[in-house]
Length: 432
Ligand SMILES: *Cc1c(COP(=O)(O)O)cnc(C)c1O
Image 1 (cartoon, helix red, strand yellow):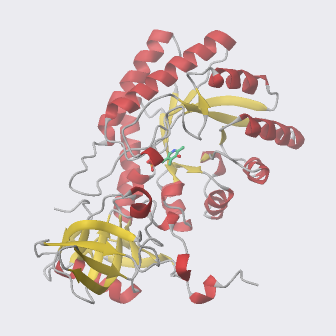
Image 2 (cartoon, protein in one colour):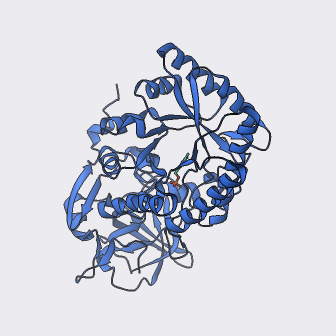
Image 3 (cartoon, helix red, strand yellow):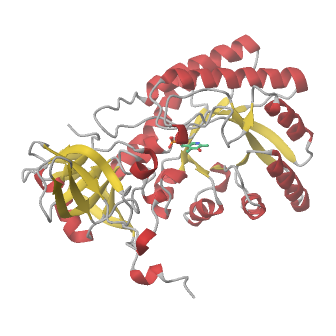
């Protein structure tokens, strides 16, 4: 019935997550609150590992794209599950290191790394720095030289694949701010410059074609294009790049309209394509990295709110206002993302009332969902928005000086906070 296996309805007709009654969670921890199911997160990590073992002889590693959700406890869980981590800023790297994440399993991404961030990445000995442009190349080479080390790098390539997804989360085409373009020859030129650098080792090529993708063909196509490029590099330079990073982007279920496929199907198709290309081009079968973000944590999370005012505008629509909004979930405002909303204390009743769920910020665009059906709402109800585990907490802001909600981790009927709710005192902490 719901978008995620960790959600059920109990005998009181309340929505439960990870065996916890959401109405009780709202009483205990207050609203708004993010709730994450630990079992689902761990199960998703394991599914990637199993898939690599089953279809690719274990010759690969999933790196959790931590921009989807980064805090100490999530880093610890991912570490325990044996995945690597992809970070895109000094702040994400700092968090991962503080959580005790092994630096050699961290890849450092980003389209405009500052010199300080590159220095931090090199000093903390991250496994790989993913070069996005030639300015970064110069900085990495100089800094590595001054430290007397050789930096292990990857290069972000735009493979020229059009993934069918929202334009703001599509990244594989020429008109993208990320990476080196293949079609124009820019990528090959850059590869030659990288190979010529004495303080740099080119060990990997990377591509990431976009996010929330359901169609398998663009992924397979990207893998083939990247293998061809590895073949071309060897022909032109004699260098064999041994690792291929195919990025993330697997779609999840936000609403009944979304039909995600299993990672197994992805892995089966992609590994077949990669192996076939390796044979055809007489290349070694590469070590493969994947970078799932959304698909590891998205469906594991929900957000709980309390319903405040309800405005029925005759012949227009009914606004249901909640005690959060774009500050804790900016995705509808950014991309018009679909979400499933449920009145948690009436979850067993039919969703018969069409409403627009509005936040409390001073912006007309502060909406969570428009014209969606929920159980008949009343003031004081608990509203749950499903599949908010990815790109919600990590995109949260303090607009209107609204404190960020806590993250509550649930597991088999037990709940604990892993991120505290911000206080008003926190809001003025850096004010002078
Ligand atoms: C955002 C991003 C990911 C993760 O994408 P998901 O859609 O969350 O799986 C992986 N790699 C890179 C380089 C990214 O920018």
